[in-house]
Image (cartoon, rainbow, N blue to C red; front, top):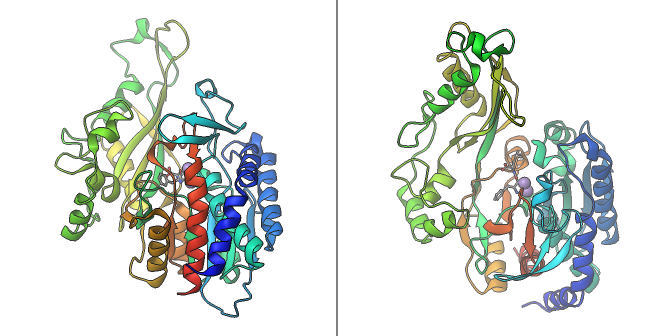
Length: 465
Ligand code: BES
Ligand code: MN
Ligand code: MN
């Protein structure tokens, strides 16, 4: 281990309480990007990030966009080498905290709690996704700076505030700031580990696209005694169509849906099989036991290499207390589709529209509200940066990292590749049971500590690349 790295790890140990307090500060800012009521909080969160970067010697600023502000910072290492210069990415925005009554303690009042399984955990919205995660990197930079007065490689940082709401102002921002943002590669801390003891590097992300369909039947809400039996109910029309989205084997029935999906290579299949994934435990933890995806495919294959059509919400008719004998005029549903490499988001959404239209009775109409789309992305796993990160993770965790797929999506990472021609390296420390996007989100204190130590080591390895 290099001498400076030793010192950096010592600084991290000495700074533990202060480091936890810094994370608490940013969790206290309710930066919910989908809800305009929290616009000011998003600005505050961006300012906070820029301030903290400034403290560690970054030339950092808050950049307004048509949506939430971006935070950009640059640090030129005095190591005298031009490369690698890395771009670190994270997001300061969080998902809404509802349902609030399901939280044991308030979402924006972070606390350390005793956890029977993990010892100490940090609770709060964003504790894991992505505040705890991006802070592991900032804390590593801070420790390098405190211990050595410098960073071992040049680092730029981009922290966005719209990740959880589809990053609408991202593409124009990347376009307008290409030269400033294109670095040798991106480092991203927004994914998970294999398990609590085993680090991971994520090698692909699924893409995402969405559609909202509104079916109209009668021209107004009707009394179901006067019209019931004769008039068509749009909820019935919609649910019948949605019910026919899958066949009895869990396969999506939209014509052409799987056309562009690559078959899983035998090598990939073998690597994933060797991971010995525990399906019963995975489903058991959320109160389920029967895998509900395509029959004949393992859960990892379903999550990491197959697309989905998910109904996220259905709205229609009377849902208040008691009964109301009504045939509603409209019914609607929100859907999202997880995509795998080579699938085109627009094509998938058009396929869904045609699927609905071809099943719609003549006296009903359907309207489709526009959504966002971002394709899946796979990463280079053969380059020196990948090896540098794998080695650093093995040093910290005492085990080789697992190379994982990821069922989730981080739209910007695909844009880094397609818009800026930049590869990404995804290392994260979240666990499946961190309850991200759910009540009682948490981040293990060990994830936070060892995450920062891991980045400290990765930066050291990158400087010797
Ligand atoms: N950090 C997640 C992505 C993720 C989820 C990585 C699970 C690893 C495991 C990210 O913040 C996220 O929630 N992405 C959204 C994207 C959407 C809102 C555009 C997602 O995947 O639903
Ligand atoms: Mn995230
Ligand atoms: Mn998220």
